[in-house]
Length: 296
Image (tube, rainbow, N blue to C red; front, side, top):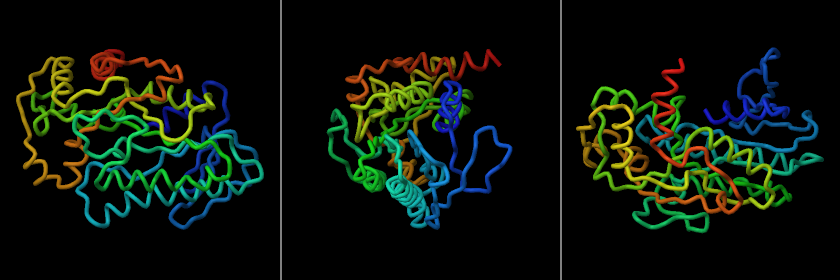
């Protein structure tokens, strides 16, 4: 979702974009493609010549399936191994890029209740936090080679094209939506256009390096999210799914992805002068769930 939107934006602005793909490249692809195989540590970037910026957004989705031992290994390895391979490859080419952007996530902070969290905060506990730490450390080879590495800690991206909204839109539209747990957990969110603009902004601002929280300035509680989407869709939200039910049905995955409280603030983006299109969740949800449907 993010990669497609970002590629479109960069190409529209006149940048030449090359995509790394894990299948056979298509010679007729609109965006040039180049093959790599992270599972078998296969990547030779020398054929591409000079690269100004590298952006890695890959990783097996964390939600949708219960976390078996095998699933957790796949989630972690798909992030850590591919990031390490890309970082080592970029560090080894004659002219490395000026910047490597690597996706990370607010899961880095774990479940922190009411604690305000910035880029200076320490990692939390749990599978997602442990994974994020290893994920970010996997970019060290590029950092040690003098490449400016930025770990973008994404919040919940509110877009009709994927992620959370595609999973909750139908329940809320049919009046089957409601708060999760007690609803007091903080959800750091951001719109897809702001994600794309933030990534472009980071590339152009040399002072930004290390972890950067890519979230809206004001996180919201799950109960507030529930009230807002209910209002935008003009549907009641009667249902309440308590923690024991979430744990029973979805296990560790459900608890960590929906009930963890992360009151995250994007201090680095704010200090660098970044301006958000959507600082209001209501305006973001209205655009994604109502206005976009009317446009179609």
